Image (spheres, rainbow, N blue to C red):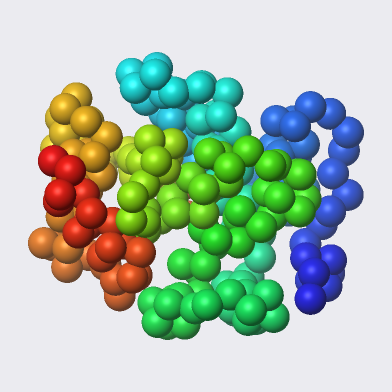
Length: 203
Ligand SMILES: [Fe+2]
Ligand SMILES: [Fe+2]
C-alpha cells in the first residue's frame, strides 16, 4: 500500500524550493492550521539550534516536516502502518494518531526525498522521544511542546524553558515528568518510557 492509495491525499504539489513545496502540501490538503503550527515549531527549533550549536537548516526542515502526515486520517494511519509491517506499540493501536510521528518520516522520505538522518530521526520521535536521543531529536521534541497550538502558553512552559537553559536533556525530562505527574498521557508509548529512563541517567 502506498500514499497514492489514499485518494483524498492531494499530491499535486506545485514546483518550488523544498520549503515552498512542503508548505504547499499542507495548504492543498486543507491543513492551514497545522501549517501555522509547523512554521512556529520550525522557528522555535531554529532558535534552540542557535543555543546548542546545531545546524539551523536541519532544524527548520525538521520543524516544517514533523506533522506532514497529519493529512492522513488516523484510522488510515493504522491501516497503512500495518501494511508497511511496522511493529506497533499498544499506545498506537489505541490512539492511531500517535503514529503520525513515524508516518511523517515516511512522508518526508517518499514525497520530499529527504535523506538526512538527523532530520528524519527527529521527525520520527517528536511526540515520544526515544532512548539515546540525539540533540536534533531533543530539540524538535522541546520545540514542538513549547509551540502550543492553543490560546496562551502551555502550563509547563516556564519550567521547561528554565530547564532548557540548563540542557536539552533537562528540558525533555521536565516535560515528560510534568505530563506523567499530572496524568496527561492517554497511554504511555514504550519509547517515551524508555527515553525517560535514559534521560534520568543523563541529568
Ligand atoms: Fe506532532
Ligand atoms: Fe507538532
